[in-house]
Image (cartoon, rainbow, N blue to C red; front, side, top):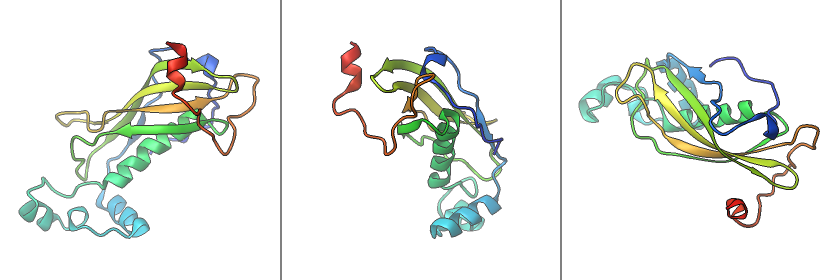
Length: 171
């Protein structure tokens, strides 16, 4: 994975349409799959037995675990937002498998902003692209991140989400 971003993001520094720095991961190898399998104790054969994956499951080869791909997305959000922020929600759909050897890019774009009393909310369009694959988009989705105001306090920990739909206040 690329270098961890250490900068703190602030609500005021972002505008709708801003692109987040891309996180590029890969090429993903069978070693990545084995380490992740050991860490989570999940040994489905499509992640380590190439013959089974191709002949029995009719896949193009070994495929990367969805939970490892999820980890890339959550790491992307956490590292981009900074230590004083809170990655509140992320939702996405896996629409294409990621085979061993793939390079993926996690991307994001600011969709909406909302000022609250103690922090601001940023809604992001997010996704995961498979470099050199068709279709390239493997996991489109969205995320909500709470960012501090410049000169303000960090987003409270533990994070307590707004009680109602905060977006309804702005419309």
